[in-house]
Length: 156
Image (cartoon, helix red, strand yellow):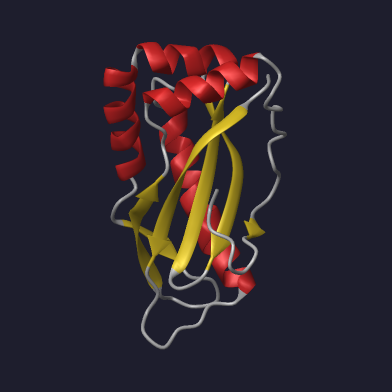
């Protein structure tokens, strides 16, 4: 199935004061957030139409950015059903607020909350769907594993 990226969500996992997680520890926390998101997505009405295409982490606290994509048909369906689609998707995204993830190599846990969503408005979503259908946007390959976001690079 071909997926076209259309948005992302970034979660912040707080770490205890004085804790400076390594890449390995941040990837471990990001993996837990990603798995929780994918479980929620799998039991949602969007499970057949949206897929996680990429997961990246960054620092400050541990920032996990999950990029989602949909099929061309799904994108057009979302445009048509936008008044129902956006609130339902936002509820799904917020469902991880308060999630505690274990920090690797310690007994500490960090609480997670929705920091930012980048889910497009109807006009932008329509443009993404049209460009995808016309071959102006290439489908993405689902990334395997969790990668560190390049320093200074904002989530896309």
